[in-house]
Amino acid sequence: MKFKSQGQMLSYVKEKEQKIIKEIDRRAEKEGVLDNNRLLDYKSLVTSILDAEAFYDEDRPVEEKKFSTSQEVDKYLETIFKEHMDSAWKEMFGK
Image (cartoon, rainbow, N blue to C red; front, side, top):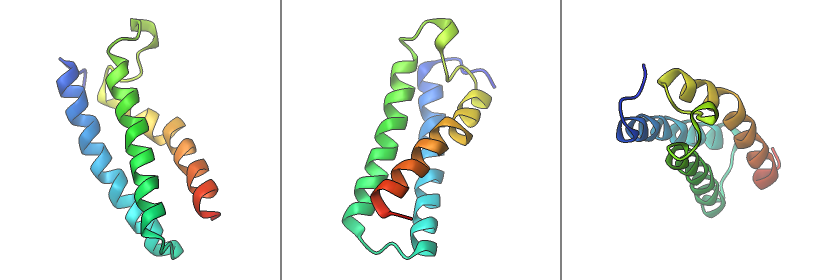
């Protein structure tokens, strides 16, 4: 689906953020992460990065936009963003 406005894209990204937070909670439970402060920091880091990418996508030249469609958002989340999440997880929790 092609987004008609930045607001529509941001709403879609916010929906995805909620799913990501649930995934983080499941992963923390599965891997026995008990440090709630570090987990909260991790969630904040992840959502801040995604928010910044989405917010600044509007200012990028057309050929550099990452979030013109829902498919592009999903692809970004499944590839580059997931790699960053996994790397940050390993660095913060050593798992």
